[in-house]
Length: 352
Length: 285
Image (tube, rainbow over all chains, first blue to last red; front, side):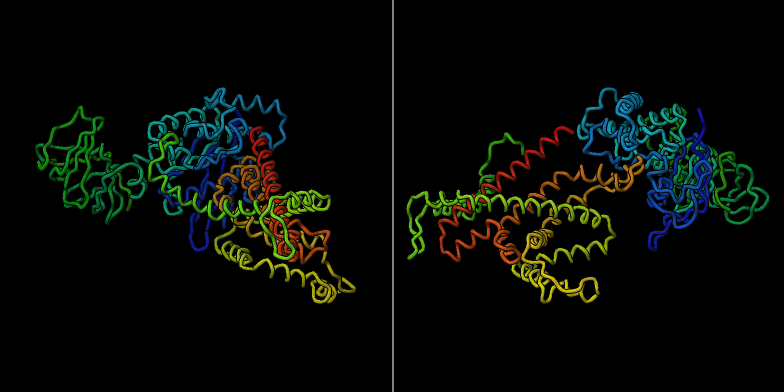
């Protein structure tokens, strides 16, 4: 399999009148991988995708695909397949007509189109549905048609703009896995825009977290989850407990007057934020550990079946969330006085 | 509400209003017109009730049949010209930014406030020799002397298109604004240039509304008589001009009524044929 579809963005900026959607992005993406652009709505992720596709002209900066500058090339010469948020299927064509559209535009001969369309229908598990009208399809089937249509021309780059947002939760998870397997099978460089961190974690090799037109962090999903680079990333990718403390300079941090050791040590001095994931925090029902713990009282407890959650008021503003598997759960009552322990290896300093 | 549900007293009450309006303002007047077409024209006292086929027999003279065919021809042509200009115009209008979009729309639709008489007179002057547009061309130096472009077939066609144009845009506008921009973008990511996107995606999707706009212009211009009367020679007059002429100048209302019914039936036949062709070809694709 030839590896192509390496993408490089240089100083990309997009302004709409007086709104800056993308505020200077430099990014190099490896070929053959699935990358997600993850961020809240309005963070510029869709605008980035549209600039890569050629549907939006960058105000500043360049776009390189396989070391070729494609910034000035119109969308229809870019060789990039895209699945739109609305899916944008052609209502006047049937399933086969939609999938074969790009081939027809290229002037491919009829027999070739027919066989290629059949191949693609098999690929997305829609065998024998070529004659259906778009209006007769379910949401998941439409999604598959849009995917097959975008892949028909074997593009160098496959872009998806929140492709699953209109589907219900179960179907969404199923299609996430399907899309990921399809991408691995084809080895095509794929960028998916999403605001759903579970989706990004499920599918990607690499997550690009964006906020307010800028990139906050780039990394493999687990690394981004475990070692968030900023309070924003820590809060956006999953839930987190943010503890604000004072770094003394000897590697430890004082939170609410109590000593904390942190992963890798705190090499700065002054105010720092520490992120601890709910599943890393532990409840201590009896006694108060000397280091890395805060005393508090249980505010609320809920058992979600797959997960047990406890909200503790430790007097630091927000409630501390402690989560764990119901199997190894210490039963606590609402109002009970407890201590919450934050293991040093899970205390990540997110800003200094 | 399901289709099989029995109509309740309330739905009947709701239906009574449109049905009543249709009856009072359309069916009854049309019935009167049908009756009048069989009346006897009395040169002294306008007309009096009778039952004679004289008006209908007169209608089937070659001259009126030929006028009828001419009317249908020029109005179909006006429909084609209007759609050919109005469709791309409306499409690009809906793709514009908000501000120029609204300004342009207001300017075009303000033409609706002009009465047909004013439009006909304006074009009469603009296309005339004495103070028409050709004088500007002479002044610039493109032409050596001013010319008259009316009365002529082209002038009639121009006038008909002018009065129908805003209506045509009004028909196309709602659906074209609702056309998802992502659909045309999708076509572009699949390798279609803007030109090919227009022909392979925009036009096919908008086909039903294009046909509707075309038929609207056809029916609308078929009823216009002032334009053809002012801007054309008698050989460019549509059947409507003759109807007006018979009704007002000749005071032959029974004959005018017969012609009006004939014209109505003819236009219904044309609309039916076009509609049939449209639905047939749509099922094929």
